[in-house]
Length: 269
Image (cartoon, rainbow, N blue to C red; front, side, top):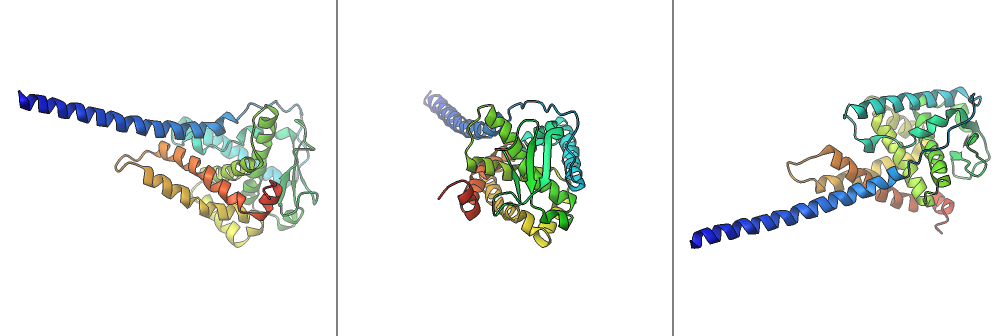
């Protein structure tokens, strides 16, 4: 009888302990998932572009937009086949619905220390103005590099609609979001293009996307932190992706706050 009571007590203790561990694990996962959804909540449906014809853009810009549009379609197809986590889908893709209203121009009239700029103050729903410094026209930038540059500005276009819809997002949050969406765009490029574009930036176009390149190196901090959280033998790619983008918010925010140009732009000093 004593053995039976002892055995039952052990079972109860194990049940309580396992319930406690499961509760805490689910709590952590839900907390990470909740943070991940914060960005998705900002994906507000924007007002449709009413222009029947696109602006006359430089061929460099059109080629880059064509590339982004192509990857937008392919990434959705991959997601539908459950081969790609939704966390990897660049959230600036909805801005392509307003492609006819994208007015991308070469201009010197942008803030100092900037290579490209979405002019939210001068823009309207039918005239979304993105400015790129004229030096890049002379360089005849590779389509992949230009697409990566525009990925950042298209995220600001998406934020423009989000803010108009009432979403509250600080300057630092806007920049962190834009840089992280560049990373997510890089993630959906094929395995040949990913090393090619980063090598191009490092060797030839660091003056164009050097800040993004430096952040790309910093992402190892997020990967390392999330790998440590994975239970041994229970690796789950989707939960890792949720963790990674959650950690990247912190990594990118801290990264931006330490760059003098963004300190000035976001009035941190």
